[in-house]
Amino acid sequence: MGNKYKEVIAEIQSRIKDGRLQSGKKLPSIRNFANELNCSINTIVKAYSELEKAHQIYSVPRSGYILVGSDKSAISEPIIIDFSSAGPDKSKMPYRDYQHCMNQAIELYKEEMFQYSEPQGLPILRHQLSKQIQDLQVFAPPERICVVSGSQQALDLLVSLPFPNQKETICVEQPTHFSFIDSITSRGLKTVGIEISQNGIDLDYLKKVFKEESIKFFYTVSRFQNPTGFSYTNQQKKEVVELAKKYDVYIVEDDYMGDLDTKKKTDPMFAYDPSGRVIYTKSFSKVLLPGLRLGMTVLPEVLLKDFIRVKFAADIHTPVLTQGALEIYLSSGMYKAHIQKLRRQYKKKGTILKQAYLEYLPAGSTFTGGDSGFYSTIELPGGMKAKDLVEHLKEKNVLVQDATNMYLPQYKKENLIRVSVSQVEDRRIPVGVKKIGDGIVDLQR
Image (cartoon, rainbow, N blue to C red):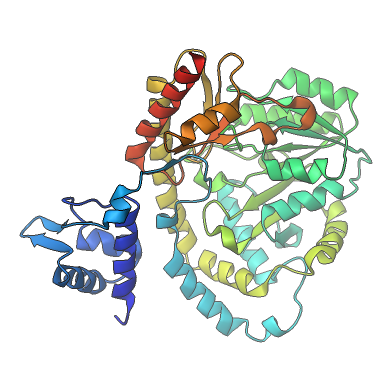
């Protein structure tokens, strides 16, 4: 048991401090808490016993353990509802499981860590990734897969890499993630934006852009788009791919959260043209541990050699240890079990968020997405500016993000906020949305 029980106690103290556990309320049952923290029942029993000796909790026969009191300084602090943080729920991350994989990787790859590795990625990991992405309807041999330091690295390299169609303009959904905006604006590249709304993009306009502009590639987040949360239908994806084929345009498909899709018959764009027209990228940041900085991309053979060359110039290779640990985590089945839990969790959050939007947002406000539990947007009514609402809500202890920097300069809108519930407790989501709705009304007066 060692000192593991102390880690359990530290977790309980953390929950007391941030308000997840409150005086007079029950603690998680011993069995449920052991499953959640991935430790033994004896460890939880030991932790509860120590807290009971310290008079911080007490037991009620056939009922469980009750919290006696909490840190007064924590109680006096206001509870912040943070819709601006978009990382994964820390309480659901598989720290212990991944620690085991890291320790095993150190043993397996101790010699490889003293020498440079392949820029394309460890062969054993690429073989495992090839198997793994089949569940997402992505069928690609290991030879076409590159391991990258987060999918953002792949996107940044593709932006500057010459493509076989010899075109230069990049077509981008508006809004989109600010890091991709930075990649293209920092290089002064030619861009065309296409607005994404509740119903997606205007395919007729996309056709016009593909036909009249010299489009190198169309960057799209096909599922749970950041920041709108929008997901294309299979038919929409198929039509986009057909347009790309017709007008010699490549598609860079960012499927960073495809694992969270609960619709079993949903396919990525890659499935409609696996030959190389669609370049597929995927990240593990939102579903695993962001600090690992691991991602992958599936490239056409015609781009593979040049991509590996610029990847080598960027960082020589992605760290061997983290690659090895990911391979062990995937092959052991831990990842699959972890994803199944996350799907249920975030689907529930998305349902709660949508219900709260319908109940509390005032007339004139519109919203997009929310299905993933990660991203959605609220378009503010009239001439209201997002930055004003952000400041107003701070005073109400609610944090949201101004989405202005998620637009290309020539397409900028200032009346959009991004909302993420990934780190917000389910019970606080409606409370926070009501405060957003009230804040909009306040600023309209």
